[in-house]
Image (cartoon, rainbow, N blue to C red; front, top):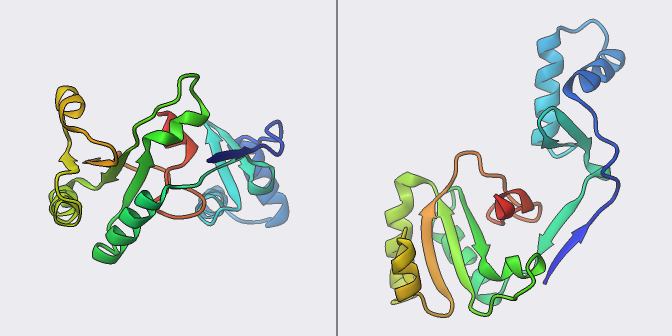
Length: 177
């Protein structure tokens, strides 16, 4: 089950407004110092980048959370154990059910991973879940060869955002992209 909590979307600030605020709080610094502080606030979660030249404080932002299936949690735990330093995201087809009229019955797990470790992920997953793993399939291959609870290994988009609960979880921006 997915949940979406909305706090107050109307309270957003532009980059210049934030820099002006920081200048009042920390006078006498250079503009680049304020920009670095703004970037640090985004990185540590104090500030949320919600769009082009639009930022919002975390306490006013919306959050999307998804309860992953046991199978997806098992895949994530396995991958975290095998590849603790790799950057990857997991998306389940059933996550879309919160946004569509016709519910999707068959669940497929998409593991998006950095290009240079795609094959390693594929081979490790193939050993653990034989017959259920596909490496970057074409559309035809997807429809011909997927089964219930199939795993698709694909390339991770550069700077793909991660979920709020865990670094491997998919956030709403990636889900809808």
